[in-house]
Length: 385
Image (cartoon, rainbow, N blue to C red; front, side, top):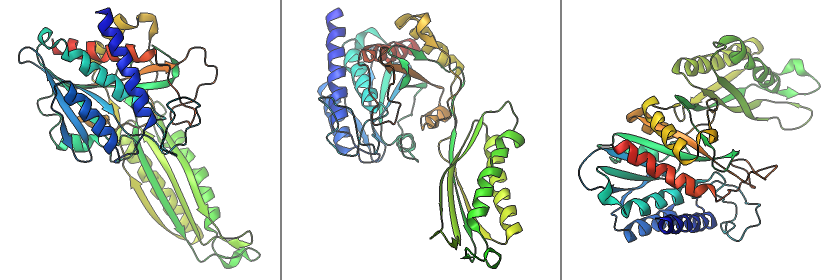
């Protein structure tokens, strides 16, 4: 048994490095998908390919029973890697800076291990290798449309985290990730000469006022016990230092956990833009693009995750962080069937300034991969009982 575990650990590390060396962007994961399909076929599995979604495959136990799905995402990010490692990205400007290389490798490790013990469990473990988690609408929707959740009783997802030492497991009882929405606001006027502001309408001033005023949405319009974020990430305006800007474009994101909070933020942003433009004589266009929904864990599935984590990493290595304001299209699975999403710490404990997720210096302590592989496998087996 020890030899089997050691061989699987080596296999997982090897596959992780291969994926890391050849990353592919969202909806472009053809080579990655091909490698995974080849690995699964080599294990005796029959992967089902889903255009724009990825692929899935079933590992059937000794007899019929429940079906538990495990999910790994496949896409990389448009980031130029700055790590000096032997398996550094060969695709310039593309990097597995969020750990999806580790996710795929660990799920392949689970597959290899379970294929050796199919007569020891009942039911089915469905492996979901999903495209495009980083780019809405994401690949989860396509997998669901293709029937990847048919007859599935529950889904479990694991994600690496850079702000916890290798082997730490972060468990969320219910709220896990936020609604992740985007807004776009374009303000128009006739502009004018900077020396004669009274002859034009200053959209840059209006946009600036909107940025400041919108901060009151969270502080004064939402229930103070409800977590929310309104962030303006981009402002484009003006032509020259002495020209009053005729157009100002604003883009940002809203993060909430409830539909009521989501609706309130959208309505308030639009009303503020309308009132400011009316006051100063400008016009505006407004878009609110609803992205991934909030990821809400099922407490019963979470209890299984935590009980297995207690066995694999020990009670002292389990943490319960506050809900995260990032977005995840795993939420679409959670809307369909009982699900749980948790995080695995992967940072070297001696690292004083680790690269964060999405950073060009993002890296993984590969000693965590064996724990992550074992966690997923044992969670699946326990959920099949």
